[in-house]
Amino acid sequence: MKKIICFMVTMFLVSSCEEYEPSKDDIVNKHGNIINLDRFMQFVENVHQGKDDKIRIVAYTHEGDPIIQDLKYDGESITVKTDATRDKFGNESINTSTCKSIKIEKSQDRTDYLLDGCDKGSTKNIVLVIWNR
Image (cartoon, rainbow, N blue to C red; front, side):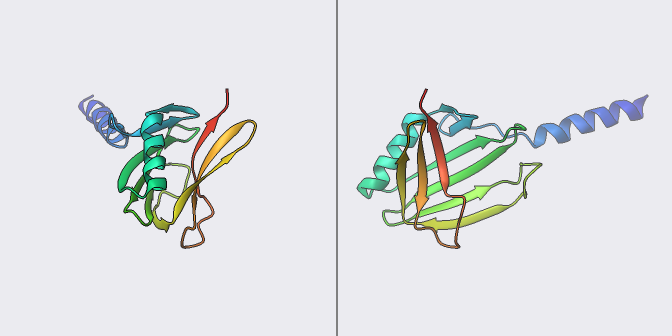
């Protein structure tokens, strides 16, 4: 019985260590429900005005795993660090790239915020999608 209890406690502690708790300042995207959208818009504005800024975006997969993007703008370029180590169904990697700007593409259904002019031939350059509701 003691072994079973120890095993259950160990499993609980291990599983709870993998969860990520966003900070109050993070931009959180849970399947289109976005928290701190105004902070993201301020970052975009600062990039367009050439002002230094940094943000963290936490986007959740369909399975509920967080993928974390840290964007840091230094007045000239945006350094993007994407941490997918908590995505159990993804490649569980950390990638860093540098981009020149953020561009906005609007359609009838949505507005896409994309990183533009990225090195390393980055193909996943959508930062945030805002659906028109």
